[in-house]
Image 1 (cartoon, rainbow, N blue to C red):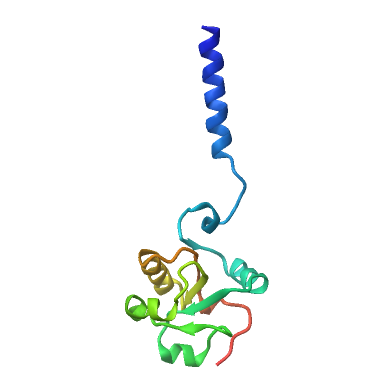
Image 2 (cartoon, rainbow, N blue to C red; image 1 turned 60 degrees about the vertical axis):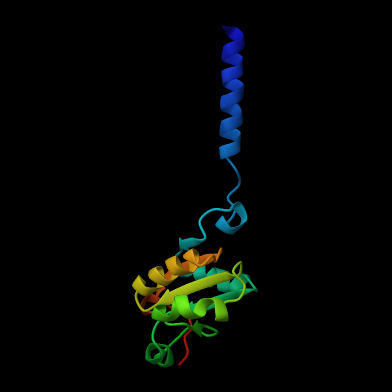
Amino acid sequence: MKKILIIIICVMTLIFSASCGDNKSNKETGGAAYMNISQEEAKELMDTQENYIILDVRTQEEFDEKHIPGAILIPDYEIEEKAEKILTDKNQLILVYCRSGRRSKNASEILEKLGYTYIREFGGIIDWKYQTES
């Protein structure tokens, strides 16, 4: 009986240890490719990372009015058709936004289905309190 209890404790300890890893990004751990993040987190990534794309999924007219500096435009209704031609590295960090957050969520889900592995959706430009350009 004592041996069985020791074996159960050892097994439980191994299971618990395996489930308690460090807090790496989903890209590093093989988790979900698409995550919603705050605008503050998006800005921090823009300030600290080097190899990323800011993806605006609004219309050309909306983009021309105001967009985040360095953003590229692929309207949400063209993501399936154009993403793989424009976004050639499926492992690159892609920061996705739209006007309010609805289109960016849909576009992020499509990108994930297309095999992109590091997508961070951060809502809409209407709430963006950082620099923009027209």
